[in-house]
Image (cartoon, rainbow, N blue to C red; front, side, top):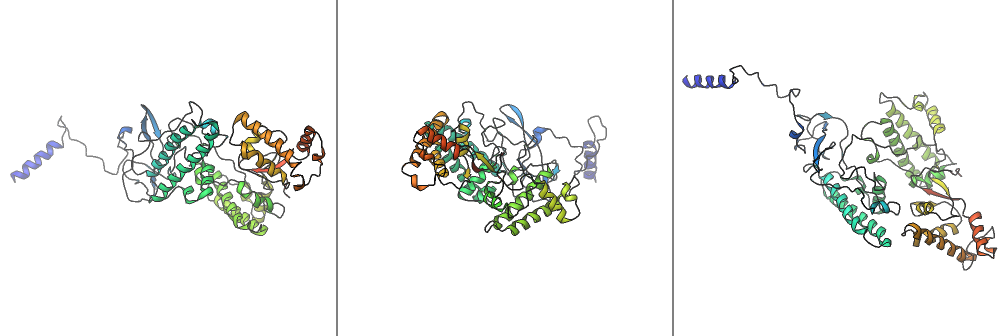
Length: 461
């Protein structure tokens, strides 16, 4: 009994404050409204938890070189953080890649920026990356850091060796990144599921800063900033016998929209349109084996029908074509509104008459000549082979000389290998001969170039 009395007295003392006043009872453990947490008290990584139906998102204040910095929403792939405790829950998609990843492929167009003195370079490490549960972000940061180091070494090489070195280290480092991704138990970065040139094109197309002009010096991931939407041509034109050639021939030049280029939040209308384009292009893939117009038409209709279903699943304003009652009327509406009904957006007319830096930027990029005149592709190959690895005036001079030598050879040793309906080779003076080639053969050469606003466009044939 005495022991019970002592325990009771002790409990009464602990329940009172220093002034003897009765302390209020503690709040229930599930009532978070009274819990105040300072930024310094929030741990960087999420604790290891079981999977839950929702994901949490927090903005974590970090210090970078003595200054506060917010790194956005982190969520480990393959594991959903717990929605209990001090962290709020959200249905926004989790961040799965760094803002500067993947890096752009080095080209003649961006090599000047890569090797520019004083260029802002990204840097990742413990100071701006979580150290637990986010190994995929660490692998991306390591790849970016390694690339910057190796590119710096390439930039100290002679001019004609800088680009080959830069392309080689870009390819090697991303190959090492994919090896690490595929060896992990979590879901790998989607480009790593591809192989060879297809994998490299995937990384190249997904690069958010292909020109190496980064927003900040130290990287970091901040989804709160404004996001520039990629160009999207919607609605797509109705496939027909008149445009099926362009539908299939130019399919590899038309963009698709992986999750990495879509906005993380908001812009639902854009996401739905992009998904419709992706479904349609995927349908075209099998139809173009035989250029089956009926197959392409069905794929187009099915993609837009699904698009309208998604439009009506949200409360925001729907596309006007989806509001029509009959399916046929909806399809006719989309066909009329298509900005490029002939699928010729990626086609442009280029003049090879005058060798200019902008022309060489085009020819040295990813282009396909659409002309049926066999000597034109041979001329372009004669220019791009020896000259595209050069820069500035040296490249322009090389291309001018290569063009002149090719015309001389074409009218000499290779005179019988092609038809000359304009009789340019009959001109005795070299200047007159070159002017004839420029005017009759090289003024308007059709070519396809990916991702460019093209004017004028060619009609479908």
